Length: 115
Length: 114
Image (tube, rainbow over all chains, first blue to last red; front, side):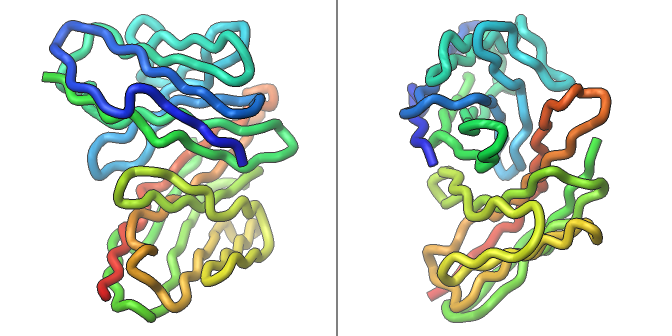
C-alpha cells in the first residue's frame, strides 16, 4: 500500500478564517478522497478529488465551503472555508491506487478545532 | 443509498479472548474492506474482501456476499487490538456510470484489558 502524509497534523483556528490541508501520496494513485470524522463518529465522505477537473461532492457538501484541488496523481488539497465551530473535526485524506487494486488507504488525519 | 450496520457497537475483552465483529449491508457490493482505527486516529486497512475468506495472523475475515454480511474474527486479543473497527462497502449505482461510492459503517469500539 502507499503512504499518505497530511499537513498540518492539527490546527486551532478562529471563526471566519480558512484552512488548507495538504495531502501527499508517495506514489501515483488513481483515486483520492476526502473524509470528515467528527468525535466518536464514523467517516463521512466529503468528495472525490479528480485530477485535472472539479471534485465530485457528496450530498451536503459544496465547493464554496470545501474547495478541493488535485493538480497531479500524488497531491491534493482541501480548504475549509469561512470556518465555524461546527467544522471542528478530523479531516482524512484517502487514496486508491487504481480501479483493479481496490485497497483503500488513509493519511493520519488533520485535527481541526475552530474557536 | 446503501446501509451498513456493524455490531456490536462496543466490546470489552480480556487479553487472550476471541471475538467476532459483524457487518451487514443492504445491497449488493463490489468491494468490502475492514479497517482498524487505533487510539491515535490512524486508519489501517486490514482486509479487502468482497467475498470469501482471508487470514492475516490472528485476524481473519469472511464475506458472504449473497447473504450481505461480513465477519471479522480476532483471536487471542491483545491490548494493541484496541480501537475502532470499521467496515466499508462500495456499491456501484447504475446511474453513476461506473463510479464507486465508499460507505462506512458506524464501527465497533473495542477495548482489550490486560
